[in-house]
Amino acid sequence: MSILSRLYVHPVKSMRGLPLSHALAGAEGLTFDRVFMLTDAGGVFITDPDGQSRHVRFADFSAPAQPGEVWGNHFTAYPAPETINTWLSGYLEQPVTLCWTGEHSHRRVKRFPAVPLSFADGYPYLLISEASFLDLQRRCPAGVTLTQFRPNLVVTGTEAYAEDSWHHLRIGEVEFEVVKPCSRCVLTTVNVEQGHKHPEGEPLRTLQGYRSADDGNVDFGQNIIARTTGIVRVGDNVEVLSTRKPHRYRAGSPAITPAPPPQAADAPVTIVYQGRQFTGNQRDILLEQLELQGIRIPYSCRAGICGTCKVKLLSGDVAPLTGSATASAPWILSCSCLPHGDVHLE
Image (cartoon, rainbow, N blue to C red):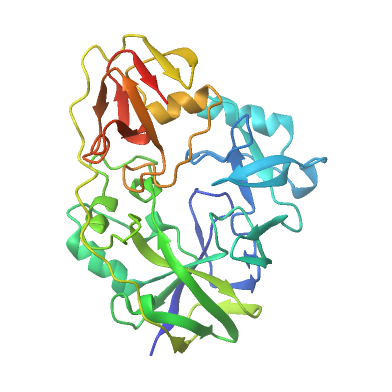
């Protein structure tokens, strides 16, 4: 028999989750899940973990709402008081704003326009089975915890990856629909306790070896939506109401292979992107340096896997941090390349 073994909410997007014994499952997700997030000066979400604390009340979030963005999805959200944002900016050493969705989120799931969405990446719920996680743990040479994947619903009593074939299920009295596998990003390599990335990109590197989809994404867990509402509790039965053909996976090429750092890493360099010129450095990846200039490059995984952040290298040299970063030259992955001197990009 399959049961709900763990239940988590993540009040602030990308930060540590809170284990619960029960929660209200609504169309927007579990109550209080990802209703806050940190954004940069341009309103785009950031994922830096925050290890300290301050207190702020819902009533302190001010109107009017301001623009925000998650993965190219634009909406409005309510900013925290300036005292909170100033403290967070000092702690993270960059201008940030803590935002709240408001009592009702203005976001919607792209494939389901009637389904509201908090600040979660694309869907209200993420489900993972303990059997699948244990299989990953056995394969991965590094220590890995379930919380690195930031699930909402954890199920036990199944075979590994049985959830790949689920379509409709009932947890307690609440019915859910499994929409798609969850493609994973570099955030899974961050230890939620210390906030440090694994130096060899684990467990994403291991997952890439056996969970690579045809579109280049690396999948683990399932994105789901609620078809009814109600209270879900740890210990609830999980009943699979219908199934479908699961995705097929292949072994991916070893993308996360750290390369030696370039020489003279502190030397200033000239970076030109689509005719715009600025002074950069040889320490930070191109994607981050472009973002600091207000240049928005599409990205998804930030780990040299998905290929979304590719730019064309017209001249100059780069130091690749992953095996895939320069595999399609002159196109390079801006998330995985350091400038190795002056570079001209398009």
